[in-house]
Length: 172
Image (cartoon, rainbow, N blue to C red):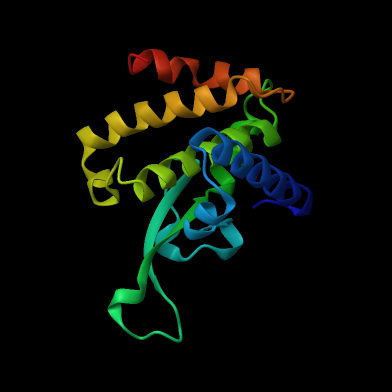
């Protein structure tokens, strides 16, 4: 599980990723506030939010304002569920990876998914279809790379190298 120092890096990664996503997709602060999401780590995940393999997953919920009981007031709410153990063990087992740049990539990647869901560029419901999932993952990895390629963060090039094999394997 992430320790206190790791959680500080998670917060820093989220702040930078939000800024980069806002700039790339040209979202105003008002638009971003409408894009409701949260980031959770292992200590706050529900049992169904844990997944084996990926470093994170996006889970969609339906939210509703408390003071408005009508269904018309419902909205999509997304949770980025970071998988602490997968992230930490990958960083520990790869001498070239550092936690913060790896988290920046992961969070940016998951935020790209959320923006694509909110802009209807990809339907969340189709994300369980394996063929659509791989196509979408390729698109999102490409966008994540485009967004981060001009960012100067120590260790980010090592993260790009880490994903290079995946990108090559999937024809990216």
